Image (cartoon, rainbow over all chains, first blue to last red; front, side, top):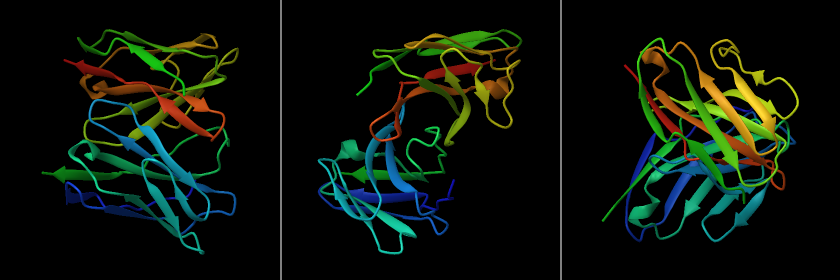
Length: 111
Length: 114
């Protein structure tokens, strides 16, 4: 599984856009990039997944450059309830479904 | 999406005892997973439990310490045996999301060993 590097923490204010960049220099051809969100006292929750270019859903956008060695999760107009730990994972979907979680990024949204 | 429940949600146990954690999912799934999340840390996979076969343990985890049962396609248990304070963690179960190759997680069981 490709190793990922993310910032340990990020602070933001309500209404701002939060961008979290994940480095994955050793990403393999068949690997996808998946982001999870974990609120305190809860299990992680799938946010978004992508392979290349841009993916957008109702929660976030995922930007992946052509070389795929990094990716950026973008959270638009955050609110206090977006305070959570965000994990970037890289791997082949359905490859035994095994997930390898790194340290994650703690995002704190302030009023 | 799958709905997963875990019992107990939290417990305080004495060292040397064992605790069995239950994981129930609202649909039939082939693969279930057990993770440990120590205080302030990320998640670590303990084992993968497929129905009808022995669980597969990750490096650093052994069956004698963390026996797992998988009697059917909607249920699994993880036992933390002969507990010590170092076993104090959150234990989470998850199931595969076949459509995306990702996982749905339960709410976790918060364990404190004194």
